[in-house]
Image (cartoon, rainbow, N blue to C red; front, side):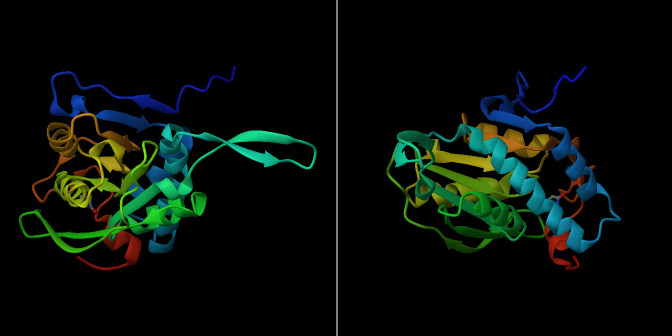
Length: 232
Ligand code: URA
């Protein structure tokens, strides 16, 4: 019998700081299948990059389920009617450079009217975020506005925390923000839960832990290096 048992489920971790998040695990079989390709160290760069994009398409579908719609008046070839529509211009995408870029491409393909900001962060020798770029469109002052921070890897949580601080300092209300990632470490989720209670987070997987170099285990390695073919 066909019984779709997977999709998007809310994750609770009672007693852990991450329980303060609205944490959504997208455990759809196609998402998990694509994630396995990313985890495989034999996956070559071009397929890796394309697979991050594919996952972006699947994740925007999941996260997009939270977008408000408004009735739009239009004429079909047969009749005047109204149809639910998303205000694409009220959506802001903020990829965290550089690994967030293929996610932003996929999100933009589905929401071409969304504006795109960029926050550039690299990790120093102590895995602390160092900012090198922050360019954001002006915030949209509307109840239905949304700002999605895109970063495939939520490891220590400090880069995402930094990006969210930059975005809110530029006037984006925290209530507009959400994070979309592919892999999340419990440590990073706890950091975000402690700092931003109520923040929606969509992830394709919650992995075991961080290693001593702040890499996610089992993880997929360095996402930026594998997307762009660079070496650490
Ligand atoms: N960033 C990555 O690219 N990989 C990790 O495992 C952690 C942070």
